Image 1 (cartoon, helix red, strand yellow):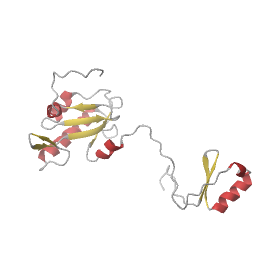
Image 2 (image 1 turned 135 degrees about the vertical axis):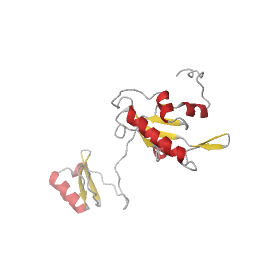
Image 3 (image 1 turned 120 degrees about the vertical axis):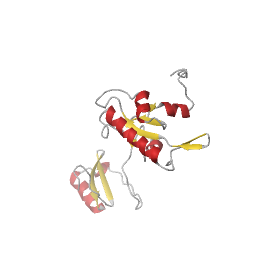
Image 4 (image 1 turned 90 degrees about the vertical axis):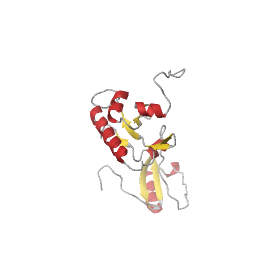
Length: 181
């Protein structure tokens, strides 16, 4: 069993004392545990009818739909790309593979009736890479000259585009920032 991983435990009873799981096992074992500790008067019994009891999963700010789409995206997290140069190399490798793929895999877009493959990456964080800098459009243009490139920030609250992506999306250099940011 891997260190730090909880072992799989099954039982018909889960005993919670002061907000913490104290025992999992047969009901008789839990009742015996309670009797020894004189806390049974503070207990509530819930019968879950043979169903599974799972811990609560609390995630206050997640992006499950985006996470599901990440399959096949280039990993540019700091674990895979500790600096901007390594990130750009990973993007260039994906670009070159996509350019030579026939036909383009899914994720493409239609431009004038023609499918165009995108290079999509996730996980870049300017505050975590060794360089402590953002990606520049010129960086992305250099490593992805033919295909649109989109790199999502680790937070999913920011993204980086190359010139081709901006063209496909109809965004020009003369676009003004929207009112209010």
